[in-house]
Amino acid sequence: MKLKNDILLRTIAGEEVERPPVWLMRQAGRILPQYRKVRSSLSGFRELVNTPDLAAEVTIQPVDELGVDAAIIFSDILVIPEAMGLPYELIEKKGPYFPRTIENANDVDLLRSGLDAAENLEYVYNAIKTTSANLNGRVPLIGFCGAPWTILSYMIEGSGSKTFSKARRFLHQEPELAHKLLEKITKTSIAYLKQKIQSGCHLVQIFDSWAGILSPTSYKEFGLPYIAKICESISEAPKIVFAKGAWFAMKEFGRLNCEVVGLDWNMSPEWSRNQINSTQTFQGNFDPAMLYASHDKIQSETVSMIKRFGGNHIANLGHGVYPDTPLENVKVFVNTVKNFRYSKLETSSGHHSDLKISNL
Ligand code: CP3
Image 1 (cartoon, helix red, strand yellow):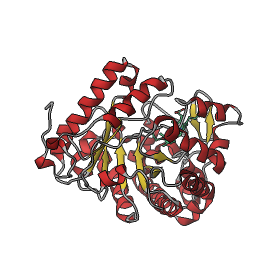
Image 2 (cartoon, rainbow, N blue to C red; image 1 turned 90 degrees about the vertical axis):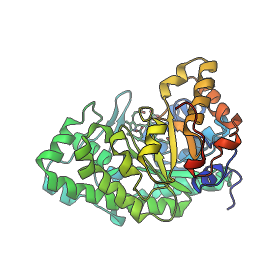
Image 3 (cartoon, rainbow, N blue to C red; image 1 turned 30 degrees about the vertical axis):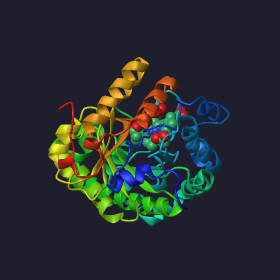
Image 4 (tube, rainbow, N blue to C red; image 1 turned 135 degrees about the vertical axis):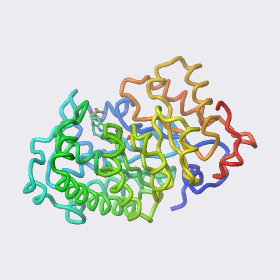
């Protein structure tokens, strides 16, 4: 089906666009009253994730309400551990919880992997098909998965954590077993992303939410190679790699077979561009906490962000939007991007040497 709004895909393809495309990580969720309404009528988050019609409904809500240039399928990265054999729960006001975790080699051996695991995610593929039909080509649909290291951390830790010290301990005490587990997660993620694309996703994002808690050396051993493997295996659609906090691996992101690199708000656009030799598109990196500022401030900071990237850029936040962010403020951000026009010197050609980057 031909897309009515393809500015996101044109930007990624290196075409000249009049402004950056815009969407927000975690745009489908509690910032929207429509989401809270659907959610409050259900037994919980899982019912929403597991019911394709409902997942499709909340996926489209931000497209209607905010006018963003992409939808991201409503789901969670934790469906992967569950499909492999470790079910998750979501505890109200606390977050993810795994009744069983990985403790030894036998636990790793018992996990399903690859197609065998990915075929348990039919409800996600159905949600994508329904969303795709209901979107009717309005905007592209983004699929996603967690990066293997981030998924491993939940499988070992069993819940969220400030330090993920148990998961980090596992890497150093049982490196071989850790690699075996990462390999199984990687195989599953590849099969999963391929199915998602086949079901109707136009591009995919890999979320490495806990990349930044590893040392550069550990990240190069336990994080990057598995992301690289996923990127090498997916040629059916463009890939976005977003590794929160991993500024130290920017050079390596530049060598990944991915079309887009996501930046968090700690990563400077100019510094990051200098680190890489590719024409990869950047995505990010507005501080989500800046969305609590006045409308004027949000507006001027958004323009300043766009100018600093200077083209070949997808406007987004540097991480997910916080659930208590005023909706009006989110709209100011989105509308500021949509009203922006690149001047000649800042057009998004994908050839950065031609760009005038202001605010250095
Ligand atoms: O709009 C979108 O971005 C799509 C939906 C989406 C959710 N989770 C829905 C969700 C996406 C892309 C995710 C990814 C995800 N899930 C990540 C990676 C992105 C990141 O933020 O770093 C991670 C680490 C998770 C794990 C997870 N799921 C946590 C830590 C939590 C609890 C924290 C929270 O936000 O409440 C969840 C639950 C979750 N996933 C919610 C939503 C909307 C809140 C559930 C609710 O409605 O109560």
